[in-house]
Length: 435
Image 1 (spheres, rainbow, N blue to C red):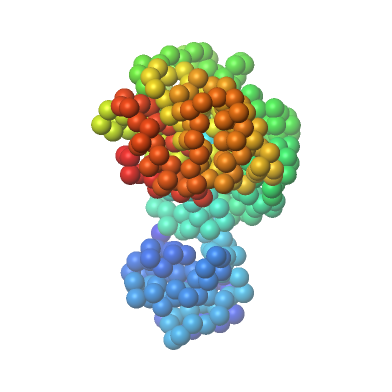
Image 2 (cartoon, one colour; image 1 turned 135 degrees about the horizontal axis):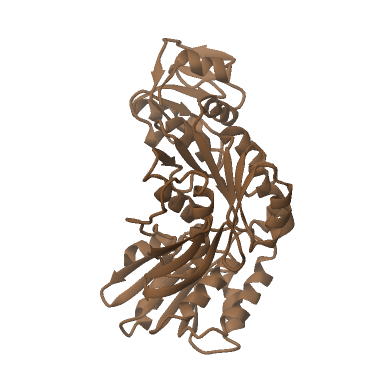
């Protein structure tokens, strides 16, 4: 997307413009390392003050910077709030494209990926990259997008009021909530309040899809006045699961009732847990698809259900994030697989009662028919203490690097190794060494 200096000034209304020259900006970033020639750099104040990287941005080709205080003699727009300016500029670029907003406590990125895969066969589609799902990532994606008929925007929150701000920026025309779990409870409160906050994604939407298996979505479904689709694993819905069977360790065959038709889909995911993501993606995509849905060419993303064959080992990579509910569901799937199984479980972060919840988790998982458990991190120490009271084959490691070294010592050959943990634990970095 190209924006003229005049367009930028008109939207962000800077208090001061240093060295105006009628520039045209071709790329936009808050990270100086990602700036290219003709870029506009936003000096955001976060864990690190973006003003410290203004000079670096210009050495990499930036044409101007949006700042809250002037830095050096570079071309700059001085504003009161650079984050607000970033959001306002992104919103100003929205047009008549459809914008699908996706939120939930788990499965957002996988569902986004599946929605993109389903729609891109019929439309020009862009999806927000990686975990660009917050008040920085969403507007940055919008500013750097190409022309597309449909935008798929992941929208994640951890604080009250954040969804209001995200909706103001992205203005979804269609919305989807995957499922509500008690995640980010230390800031968002209980699951009922989480549903209320995430439900704000519906406020700008004309269309929405709802999970009938999620009790926290029932009030949202009833209150929504736009066009509705529903999905379910167990109930009659617009998109519902008829059955599934395993074709191999990393592939399922899924039978789906889809708008009064029946689909038989090859689903290249290891666990039936991911079927809910597929149903959600089919439900929201059904508003737009004209042909029968296809998953041709789809493969799981790193950290989100990817399976890798490494020598004589199977690596199941769910290392991107974790919470007690999602982890338990995945472990139940792991327990159903044949072979010697090792579960490497790192800390689950952002819980309201982390010690108690990890202890409860340890009690529950200790009952599963999984050969070895390696608990990782200071919080998982509590899970380890509970599990070791009930069974053998339980280990603890202080960090991710120590855990993988321990696992290598425990190998006999031919194992299935399952990795899951919150992103902040760094477990995903260790998984990369295996894959």
